[in-house]
Length: 288
Picture 1 (cartoon, helix red, strand yellow):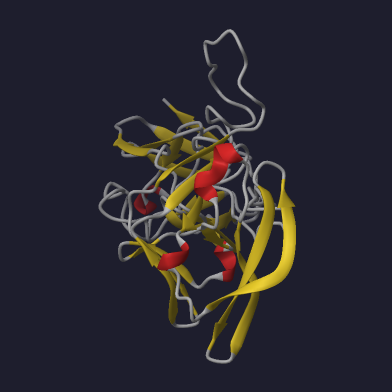
Picture 2 (cartoon, rainbow, N blue to C red; picture 1 turned 45 degrees about the vertical axis):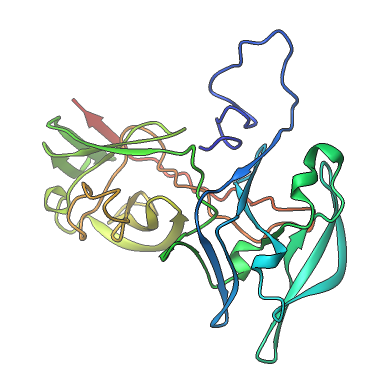
């Protein structure tokens, strides 16, 4: 969850409420300085590099990083003839990138003439996330979408007894689980690999991305029609998640569906919206 998506205060289904006499508009846009140096790379070239990035929060969308035109490589980024319309920001102009004879059509967009309340967005350029090779904050790659400064992940060690069963089969049992409290999600419980029953889990090809925890690797339960029932973050960023169990550990959910952070896809031509891809798989776990 972030400021303007899922159960965030400006999202479609906020978990709380504003104590105001007049309700807020149904669709909100909020822009702020990202306060972080960001870099965009494509085909071995740096397309944009800036310390003046603007982060746009919009109801039901992930935050989007917008770069000043002066911080783009003008020799690579070319205007496109394609135009679309954003409901609040008006005309959307698209941009292409040319690198070493390769042309990448319509992989960035800007709003040349937004309405007066949004004039600070005029001509700032955003890039289609999955059309680029990499986005960085300083020198660390950012996965999935621009990081939301209002999103938090807390990892807490516990001495509870955690038991995970699926259809009567013992999957894991531990007295050293980790509780993961992530903004907008029910608590998730993770078990170290040493406490997962031998031979129960098998690799599933599903992978999803989270800008805060990294790439999620999934597992099914042997002998059960339960694909992608468990997941693991083998390369969780450090030191933010230095309490994750050993890198080979398997982590399993508590008594909630095994949802992951949405996997963004290419934005629609109408703007920067990402599709919400979240597989839901159920395993029963008991934490005493």
